[in-house]
Length: 442
Image 1 (tube, rainbow, N blue to C red):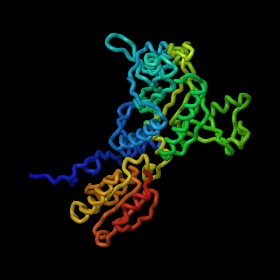
Image 2 (image 1 turned 90 degrees about the vertical axis):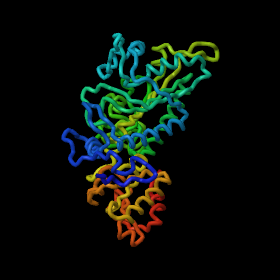
Image 3 (image 1 turned 120 degrees about the vertical axis):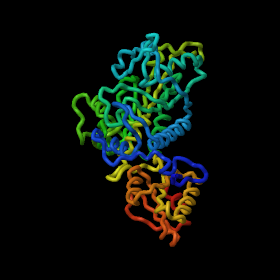
């Protein structure tokens, strides 16, 4: 007996029909998920838990990750950084050289190979990149240089929680710059600061760059990029009259005599101080010569003298950005993605397409045209009730929903609805593509 298979597009495209996609949505919220981002990432089928702090990214989640990665990569390349890829597993000798093998603490996952040689699963790559460059750099003429990678990191958190927000394994963009002097370092630091501002703006995030302590990374100067969210673990202090902002620890270090309070005068003399909660998604550091000295990285100056280059490092939590965006962009129906991060920009929901030939043909015609224009489109070809299909699209955060039915075909229209608007518009078929082109920010 021949089984009735789901309708398949003749051109062989994949991962755009729901019947050919792992749309792993859940009806119930898992009991151990506290943050709304964790709940929705599980319910919408972005991730699944493997073990404490370890998550598998499902196809829908990978689509979002790739959107974030592409924007990060684009702005890093525009800023003149060069992409590399370093090993995740690092030999202990490098960390002993930098004096961090013991100092880094229990977050450093230490492992041994079959020969009893010690390694760690890298939480960061200052040691590896410094080792690389001490073998590649010899002259001041090769500086400045800025290298970056997008790679999996591991930090053995004592209590992983909040899903990918504080996981043990995570995806990160980390970059490292090398300079002949502090003026050059400051110049690249500003370039990276500006690139990060562009990245988070393109991703549709509400954020603030704040003065911060340098922590375990070390160095002289740093800024955190904080996504504003009530669920944030960090408290940031900002002025209502200037661009001044700092995390609470940095602000209190500046005011050594007493704790900072809301309503205090801003340290720059402009406006009053107020508090907000934030999620750290990026951090930029001026390291100085901390690592180049410890690991004896030198270049020859114009005068032929050995010089320890100044270094900067710059990190972005790629997987954390996904969760942070959901914390800012959701409602009781599900996720509301910014256009730049949406796994699918448009959902086509045909009514009874398996029975109605005209509906199927019209749906595929629109689908083909939208795909040819470069839109990310999901066509829902499931044999489900309309309410179920609509609820799924709301849950996974598709912003633009188009419904095609027999009555609309008779009238020459489709139904259009935006994720954040309850109103349904009847749009002439020939006008729906211009409308989408106008409303979707690419």
